[in-house]
Length: 88
Image 1 (cartoon, rainbow, N blue to C red):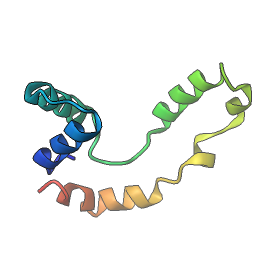
Image 2: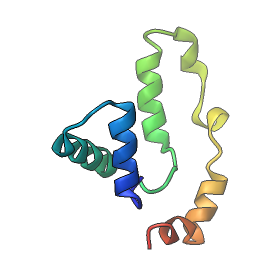
Image 3: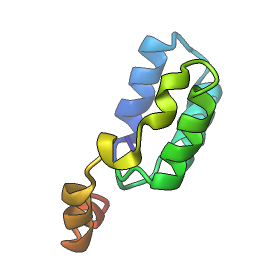
C-alpha cells in the first residue's frame, strides 16, 4: 500500500466507488499514516480490544494474548531488517 500509491488509489477508486481525486488522495494518506510498517500485534492493543469485546462476549475475558498470537516470526523479520528493507 505504501510503496504503490497509484495502484492503491486505483483500488480505492474501484471498491469504495470514489471519483474525486482529492478525496481518494486524502483517504489514501489518512490510512497510510495509520498503518504500521510491521504487522506486529502489541499486547497492549490486544488487551484494549479484548476489554471492549468482553461487553458483548463475556467468555472472551479468559483469552490471553499468547493464546492468539505468536509474534516470533515477525520479531525475527524485524531483527533481520527484512521489514525495513521493504520500504527502501
